[in-house]
Length: 135
Image (cartoon, rainbow, N blue to C red; front, side, top):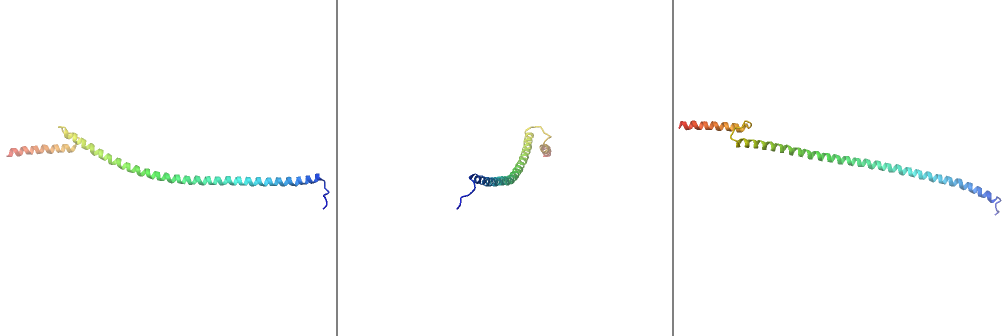
């Protein structure tokens, strides 16, 4: 084995040149790989976020539909109960008016039933007097 004839300075220059360019390419390759991985992760996270938002939106829409149907059912039941209560109040008001008319000695023309009953009573009284006269 013969020692190399080149000077040590030339060897260092050649090694530095070779090592410098390969190191640059190695670092550039890893920077490209890291950037590609970062972009892939960012894209995948956006995809997951969009997918999750779509699922949440669908669930919210379904829950809103259920709430709306439940609200409409309760509203129809309440509407029916209010209608029944109005009918009861109306009949109670008529009964109160009739009772008020019965309590007074004067005939109130606003209550037709009481007026008719009063007329029938007058006719019965007249017929009673005539029957008494005929005896």
